[in-house]
Amino acid sequence: MKDAHFKKLEKMYLNANINSEFYESTEIEILDKSARISIDVSPKYFHALGGIHGSVYFKLLDDAAFFAVNSLITDVFVLTSSFNIQFLRPVSSGKITAHGKVRFVSGKTMMAEAVLLDEEGKAVAFGNGNFVRSKVHLGPEIGYA
Image (cartoon, rainbow, N blue to C red; front, side):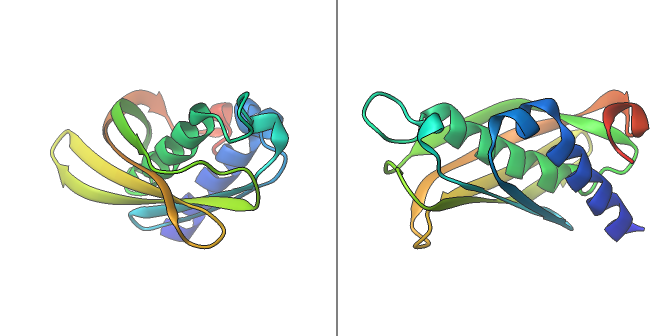
């Protein structure tokens, strides 16, 4: 059952308008309490100085942490309630990969962290966040199929 849940979450992610329109190439793998999301760096993500804009870093980190948490929740969509990010270094080429992990679950409190690595495996940013259950059922109407 878990593998089917993970595959439905992956499909939902890849088919979401923001991801299918924003990214040129995306890979995602969701496992129990973890998620990995990779993209190829493109100049369309650059700020004026020729590096990836921080919004791309944030999105990848938040998404990886989010899907690590939603790997545990099989009935509803989760929501990010807060997320903190630390930028370490710029990236302007290659592939970047966000690795998210659940760190704490207790009652309504779910915490996860993520690290963003460049093609050489160097950390370029990291973040952590809190997540809550929504009232939105996981079903075909939101792409979970």
